[in-house]
Amino acid sequence: MFEHLNEQPKDKILALMQAFKDDPREDKIDLGVGVYKNAEGVTPIMRAVKQAERQWWEQETTKAYTGLAGDPAFSDAMIGLVLGDAVARDQVAAVATPGGTGAVRQAFDLIRMANPSARVFVSDPTWPNHLSILKHMAIETVMYRYFDAESGGVDFAGMMEDLGQMRAGDVVLLHGCCHNPTGANLTGPEWQAVIDLVNAKGVVPMIDIAYQGFGDGLEADAAATRMVASGCPEVLIAASCSKNFGIYRERTGLLMAVAQERGLHAVTQGNLAYLNRQNYSFPPDHGARMVSLVLTDDALRVDWQAELEDVRNGMLALREQLSSELRRLSGSDRYGFIAQHRGMFSRLGLSPEIVERLRAEHGIYMVGDSRINIAGLNRDTVPKLAQAIIEVGA
Ligand code: PLP
Ligand code: TYF
Image 1: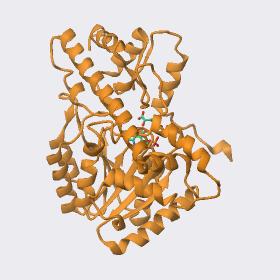
Image 2: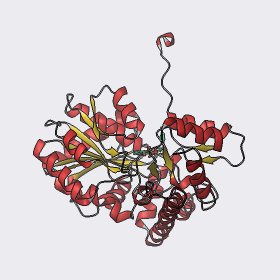
Image 3: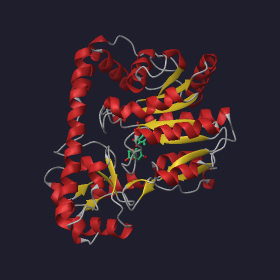
Image 4: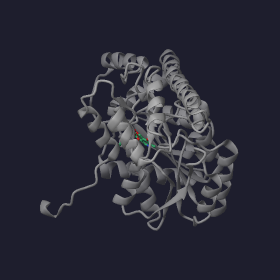
């Protein structure tokens, strides 16, 4: 049987991670995979999470199964974090999932169950796993223009024109904040225009929110998701706790399905639990438990928010520094967009050849589409990156 298997394409981001590890150069710089690193290059366990783990180690009395949807306290806490009071709790069906990826996968599964002919519109570019999962599931995918390489911002006119092709029953996948891979995001009025279009067409928005707290702050980063949740009849939301709680390997995420029509809540909740059961039964508990402990304990929550703010402000400072260093060296403002972008990533708009030269000649690793992870930099490596970019003639 196995002889019928074909080689599968590698995940380019994970392959780059390995290439970086194998590079013997001492001064190499890793701007690849989207994992937060502090100035020392370490991905720390957040203080509040460590504290919650200590407490839980003492308090936990059983490892028996939770429920198919995970611990309800986790769903409640995360719904509060992501949606605030934008919608009533009884309008939100939710299940815990293994990471944000698990939530994305389950959302696509739910879409296919509800409407097998739904097409999913995704931004060009988007997180490569969106495309690879959709392809694996044989769901028809349509790209919409998103990034304006010239300005480093969003090509909103192009985006709206392409979304004009959507039909009733289609789904449009949007990044709630901190767009991966570009770093370019919609403004509030642009979000409102998307909501109006989606509603006019009878399309269901799906939001992937994996970086809440990494852009303009926890509340600001959730604002668009809340607008969509309260402004559209039905919305899917895949939230990841990997980055903002720093619990990547614990695999912690939540899929939310918001329906204004309350009669749809029970059947939607039942289908989400069903999907968990078909795919892996019970979702992982440990990371979800840490998240609910941190969010429901005042002291832990305050400390977590303070540390997350430091992380966010550190990345903003690096953006400012890189942007002004490039302004100084190039004598132009062509990299000004780096300071405007939000989240972990910026797409620099460099050619694949230049990206390769930066790796070969300078030991600087970025994804082939010239996405950099801002958190891979520190105060001392920013000038080196800027110098290298100018040297290779970008
Ligand atoms: N969605 C986007 C856009 C991401 O960048 C990530 C990144 O890790 C995820 C979802 C899901 O992450 P995880 O499955 O590690 O929670
Ligand atoms: O885009 C990134 O770098 C993160 C991490 O298969 C990641 O989202 C990368 C590849 C992957 C899963 C997560």
